[in-house]
Image (cartoon, rainbow, N blue to C red; front, side):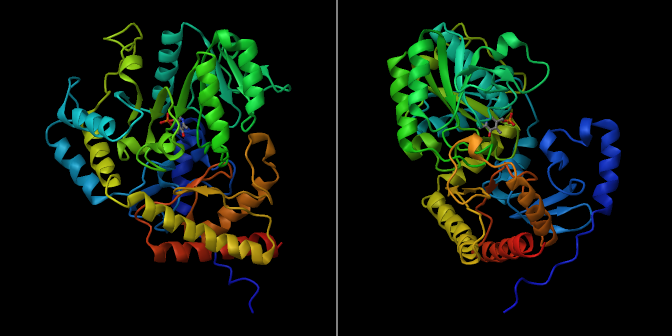
Length: 441
Ligand SMILES: *Cc1c(COP(=O)(O)O)cnc(C)c1O
């Protein structure tokens, strides 16, 4: 029996390498968003010229089965015909009016009508903006200013959330980015995930000054740190007891694990919920929503100011509307989850047989490759040494024409466009790639 399949030759990256050199002259790090620079994996980033279904093609003509999905938005796959047609139709009427428009109304009604946790919604243009606005709303409503966030949860590059715990467990935030005033970082208390008693202790001491607890209910930006439902239920209970608001940052999980996101998946009501990624059907859209009463505090109805020149952009709204209608088709999420399970299951079985220290945590159509033998539920449990394995795997997979986001801390996404055949093929590539990583040193 062959120990591992033949080693494919490295893909050509000549054109991408040239373009990246050019890009470095005009963009910091050659990119418009840092992880795209391929700093944690080998080689220059690939310049993508086309996406279709579950595949993307780079400037050197290599075509890959893609599990990055533009970092999550493309749950229907690339260039979905229904979304594309909706965009083209909208464009015919002009690209922006700065006035109310029909696709915006229709998308708002579609979401509010199919989501128990959103009575009113406000559209913005990115996930970061959604979170920023949700926090302002929480502060405006409660009259308090501090936040509790969890280590390993990412909420966009919002000033007061670019913080991480110091040495102690309950510490005031220390910024992880230059350019954030201490005064702002100190408004954030960072706690580890999966530790309900610490949240309780913190609220006992600081509850009177805490405006909101913000969490990714399915933490998926620093590995996939699946939480027990009990932990999330405790947050709900404690938020009520200490009169603080619970914000679910569902920029990744919203419309991904179900139309009602993680809130629906766990059946836990957040006070405010934020969306991004999928909600725009591949166009730049974010949103925050809540009860009528809470949203009544938002301008022009209330005193919490928040605005946007391109908010509710008709072309972006048309894309989101077309995409979200597809997600409401009966059985959509069940089929997607089934495919994902079969895919991760095939790789897991292989790893078990070979004794590799690898796990594939997954939920809905989100998966993560964890180089560890036991489940990981908090950021500090991730062994940074595993990232060397990831780097080797990333390269092995590129050579086998499988594209993953270029960091071992990022999750992968299965889309509706991945057929069972694509996934079987990709699972084989993963198994071979892992053989390369673990058997051939
Ligand atoms: C991606 C993401 C954000 C930031 O969204 P942008 O559109 O990149 O600003 C915020 N929160 C979560 C949970 C995310 O996954």
